[in-house]
Length: 234
Ligand SMILES: [Mg+2]
Image (cartoon, rainbow, N blue to C red; front, side, top):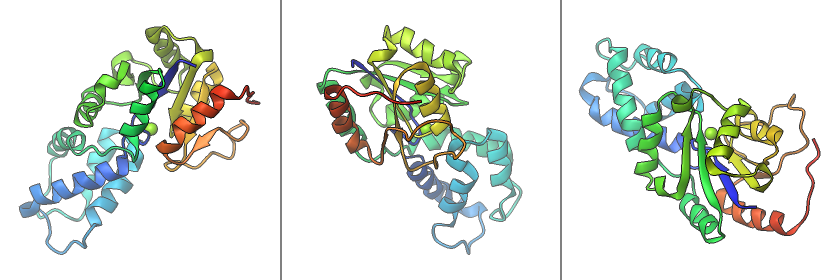
């Protein structure tokens, strides 16, 4: 095995912690435009609910924020959108153990690639810069730039081609059972599911996935898989 392909949000970044940090920044920046009696932590909770782990369109997200009963005067959706685009990446938080895991993989001789679904590629690149990890990856593939989204097999094929990688030598790590795990698994990757953001869908016709709960488990699992010849059923 020579290659590890990663999802970004909720795999290498902790989106919930990021949105919570953004909510604190938001509360401070808009303090004179917001009602005064919000309970502590209210914005972080409600922003994370609205964000739904990043699985909302921009329009849905900012329409929902503008409609919250937090504003002293009506707020323009465009202003909320601009603020989010700038400050969410700037508040990016790493998933626990991210840097150690990436360092170890490079030490183990792996080459790394990022494959991310995103409506705004600049945001994803800003997150990588903020977390100081852009140079870890030989290739960074963002759906908004290539016009294909996971789980479409063409984005996985493109990632393999860009890395000059053979799928039989490639791991794929992500938090989304369908976009990351099933999408890569169908193509022949050794897929590993990072649990915690999504539940495993009942109707997903796959055997129990290879899974980890924390990035610190990834390198030990990969070392184990490299030693033991194994076969996934599915
Ligand atoms: Mg993800």
